[in-house]
Image 1: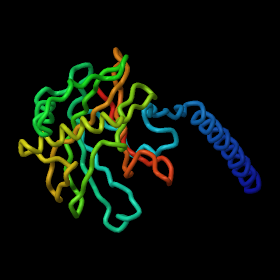
Image 2: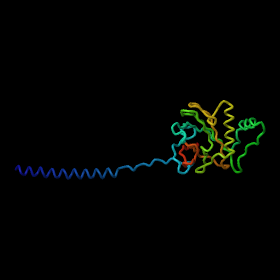
Image 3: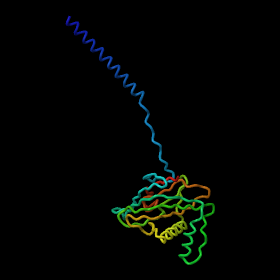
Image 4: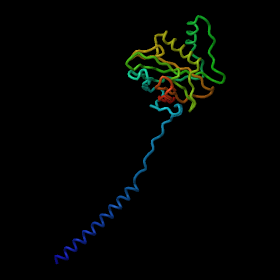
Amino acid sequence: MDTCLKVSRTAAAAVLLVVMGACSDNADRASVKTTAPTSTAPSVPTDGAPPGAEVLGTVRTGEPFTVTVLARDTANDPERWQFTVRSVVCGKPLDSAVMAYAAESVGSPTPTPTPEAGKQFCVVAMDALNVGKSEAVWNADNTVSLNVGDTRYSHSQKDSAYALDYAQYFSSRGQTGPTFGLNPGSRGPVHGVFQIPTGQQPTSIWVTSGTAITTIDGVQPGYLVLLK
């Protein structure tokens, strides 16, 4: 009688193990079947960034971003700026008050600025705040490009001169910008003047964190500002 009971118990245990194994196998199969596919994050647009450049961040008009200007001679005390793109105005003449001030400063009339054939002026207005630890100088010449898709437009020699006219005009009104140097904690306006094809609209701005978009060390990292 005891022997039969032991056999029955052994058989029952074996059946239980088989049932548990089958349940476990079914559970594993069910978990595999019901696992949701991994979602793919939307890609961040990079049109306007120089090929091979590291995109440190992507912001939009009105959103501040901080750039650490990388240079060999300032490696131990890098310049740091907080920039905010305020506006981009295309297809209009350059500010008449700025041009009048420029003419007055040289003491003779100057011709009305006209863009190259088939192109239009675009004026980029930015706010710059020195968040570094020493006085620093910065402007949009060779450090900023205005982009139409993946086509990038930088300052020409004339454009740089026009941008300097803007800097001098606003400085004369008590709004000194980084073109003439700003101390830590000081802010001021900075303008970039660009020429893009007539009828086209800019889509982004590239602001390098180097001393120039491309240096002897190659293309430098930077921020991409998406225009609204």
